[in-house]
Length: 123
Image 1 (cartoon, rainbow, N blue to C red):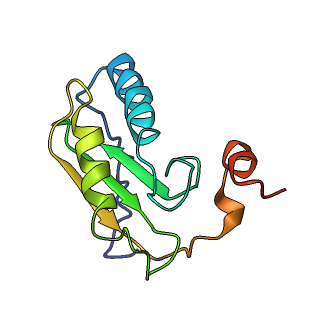
Image 2 (cartoon, rainbow, N blue to C red):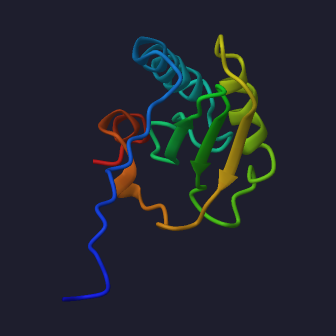
Image 3 (cartoon, one colour):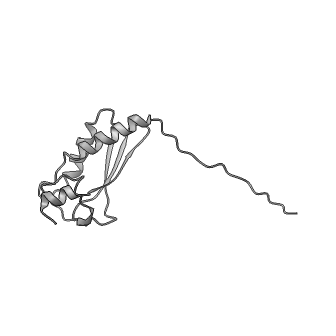
């Protein structure tokens, strides 16, 4: 007989404090807000360019956004995160918005939507 016993740990479940309909509404409006932000040198919005990697709506309505830039030397590197923060903060019900610039995975033109490819004539 063994001195140890197998202990079963119940599965952890994450339950959001936000109503699913409210989360969906906010998600839709956040995407719409992101589509109003354009890189000053590229005539396509940052969402269609594929610069947004993650949007996390927290229980307190805070919003964390991971985004990248087309290049580390992007001339708009200082202003784009503020533009994103301001656009998303305008969504009704949004809490504090935090924008994180990430470099992994590296952005490539493959991340662009067909809409961005059409605007940039990259077929």
